[in-house]
Length: 219
Image (tube, rainbow, N blue to C red):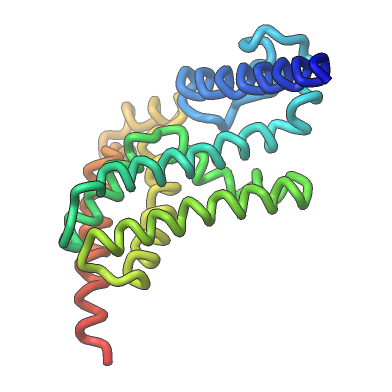
């Protein structure tokens, strides 16, 4: 029994080492798009063949990170709202924007999750991701609804907008070396490499105000 417990603890530690290595490499390399299992295992100090004991694929490892980022975002939002009441739509949007921008890995993964990650793992792993991410989503919607003046339906639309806009803007605001060189050569195109958080905040504030106004005007 003790041997099995120690083995389980050791396996969990190695899995955590792989996840930490993936986080560090993503930060160093400007995202997860070029992240490989070989690089992650090398950074974690494990033999390349060992990774399959902990994660079936690169997609499964990154989906685990995304799942944890959802929980971190939910915790950040609820913590920020602990003493907040009667937030206006604009204030609600600003809080959503700032908490998202504080999690660069999450912003990056929001592009990759629907594109490849959740569809390229087995059914039970996809089910677990959906379950955990929706738990976090529901907690965020509830917390923002209780603390603000927007309805739950309005908050849901705002979060949907936030996730979609974040997934797009993050990639544009963090161009590859090739695109960065191109923007340096073509001043007219530099607007594409926009500032992430200011643009996200402005768009989400406009969306939140518009959603509230639309609800007032619609029977």
